Length: 373
Image 1 (tube, rainbow, N blue to C red):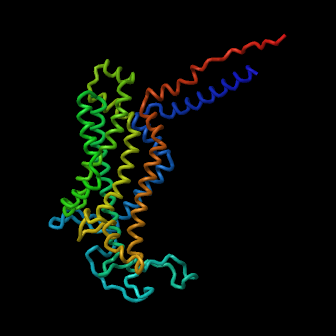
Image 2 (image 1 turned 90 degrees about the vertical axis):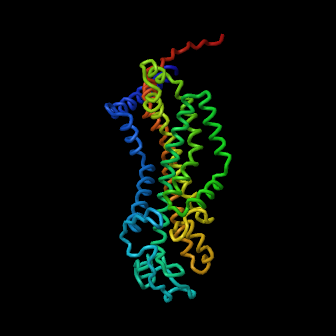
Image 3 (image 1 turned 135 degrees about the vertical axis):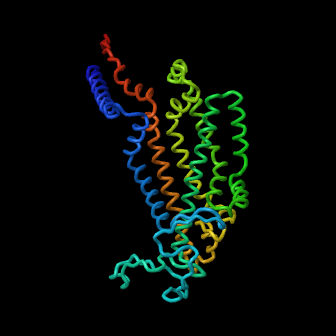
């Protein structure tokens, strides 16, 4: 019985050792960044969410073009859609049910069902009250949400990482000052801060609004990064780097920060996902993007009374908000599931200890069974 158990342990150890040897051979000669990218690319859920989000962004920006700057100093690159948010084509008053006007011309049903066949038409998303093409308005609003998401993610991620790294590495009075300042920012409701920022800077464009919102969205990430640095700064590879004469900056950015990349990636993707709802909520309340520019939240706010008579004016902005939110959240969940593998790939010490586990298994000696007299 004991011999059979020992054989099972040996076979499991040899199988695990063989798998680790194959994995170790695959990453032989690769840098930490290459290992992280390879393991992230192999995660199917992360790749599906990433390419879906990139596909939506490419479609939106190519359709509506790029429009930056303020009303006095605009910067515009036209897209492939033939209408813009300022064009006023003739409002369609025929062919709509219940006497409605400006109904969508998009038809996805085949010819044998409705008799008209599949078609896009001049206004696939319909028209608003004054005749503006609603597809151009929704594309412009989705573009605003994507720009806010990216800018807030970059600014908040960079500030949160820097503050958390400095606080967790140096500790002492530096940690106390930075964390008390972080606690003070957290106590202020973010929607109130966003309302004040939107009221003051909303007319300057979505880029300025996103930059200002990013300055107050780093607090949660900084606390997570601080916790990781407090744990990692006591590890042996940090002591070895100090003995080797490495500076504090090299220890932080070269040795500790790669081991905290999993937490940073997950937190930044969740921050970007929340930024979509933040911008939409502020615009809905009238404190975000203001007319003549548009955003998804502003479109829902303007046409919420038309939900019963012309529901497409409410559906399309809500659908794109939900789509962007779901894609970014799926990316965050995929990064969270993969963060353990990313962290082990970025940490040579953890990978080495994990690979060495099968070699230290000890063979158990069987005990003699004593028969009772």
